Image (cartoon, rainbow, N blue to C red; front, top):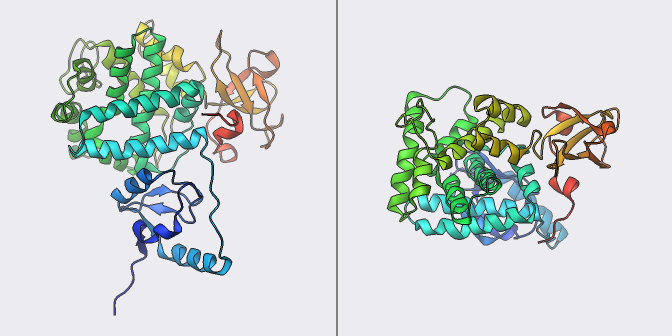
Length: 384
């Protein structure tokens, strides 16, 4: 007598999944890592295909319960309208599929260009909201960490290059380098995000080799942009030596910015076994490591002292999240999450921290009370 597996492949529950409707169960990958939580939305067929490529499945007990509930209720799915922030999630799944196709040499390198153009269009709708998503590292789906990291680095390198006044071609070259720099270690990055111990020697060898391996891959899929390739090759090199894989003494501005953003995002991003560091601490460390350096200052001015998405305490006693970089000075706009005693409240007030009553008095780590901050709560609906 055969025993049924607890895993039901996603293709076998396609009838229970409706594009644009909340999922009735969580979805895991072949290694039992969370891909989507119950209630999250699959936005299009491309995302469904990407999930299947990862060997996605649902738990049999949840599937059976959902089938019984639907049979009893004879209910119809409720379709959701995708918000601006849902579209960022959709973009993540598009890149998941694209990155895997490039890593397998199944897609041409030119496929990066339309994806980056779509990322730019999304970024230009609201740059501060995009930084908020980079900073609010609340997602526990560590299987997707390398995909999010690449997109977040592309967002911040693009904004930094624009702040520095670079022309469009140079900005695009750097942004695509951010997307491509880790194509050879996507699965390794996901593993390390959940791994409690230090990398093994084999893993360290892969890490040290990945810049050169990525360049080889990119050339094989037809990338000929030498500035992009140089940035990927050198994004772990240091001016003056000491980096890898070649210990170069002189590194291009593109590679230096890419390295700074890569390190910044890695520092603030939590892993399964440790929290990320505070964003303002990561900004301070960047300044301390390269005081007066024009490129580092470009990154710092792009982010601000307290980047959007940072949790802060105000002089009023309220806990707030930063929503907008300042137009002048260093005091950002914030949205409250608590009352004046620091107790969580659903009501949100927008404050200007340049006002002494609402000045920022401390940066805060993520706590249980404020572990999740819905972007829609503080930005409202952003029309496409």
